[in-house]
Amino acid sequence: MLLLPGRGLLLGLAAVAVAVMAARLMSWWSLSAGFRLFVPGELARYRGGPGDPGLYLALLGRIYDVSSGRRHYEPGAHYSGFAGRDASRAFVTGDYSEAGLVDDVSDLSFSEMLTLQNWLSFYEKNYEFVGRVIGRFYGEDGLPMPELTQVEAMITKGLEENKQELKEKQKFPPCNAEWSSTRGSRFWCSQKSSRTSCDLIERPLWTGWGCVYSEVCSAAQKRMTLG
Image (cartoon, rainbow, N blue to C red):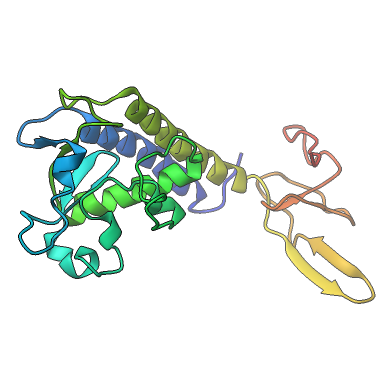
């Protein structure tokens, strides 16, 4: 199957990204020396207020020293609710109430887990990792709990789905669209796809990825229908 220039490279990079992120996740979750274990009550002391020993926050059980970003997390700042606790759920939901500033992410979707992964990458890059919270994600021995293993699996699955999504986008030529009061909506492809050798017909169907025709495009192209 012929690919438009650059598409094969993009798909290859997507596959590499999945492998790299999977390896990175494993390194983040694995046991390593040089960090502390905190119980939630101890972490709560690190809110950056007068007399507090520091300014920390946790994400998926990993604790970061965010003192260098104090203006964002200190008492009274916009993200002060994240300080001194693991509020992983709020990174996705935007619910900064006490009920929302919690670490329960068990019902999040694959795409929402990827949002958490992006935040985790951000904190790994910009702030110092200092320890782990004993509780939902890590046990008293500092090792991952089953819920963290599930999070890792969902993030990896989300990355795989993104790769498959990119692959699906390569199958079909892009559509043009127009609307008029007399003809209504119309979708069409501007040229024959070199990837599928589709013969254009008058009424293409619309899938959201591109044009899919009601005729078999080639011997290698299966008939496509809308669900």
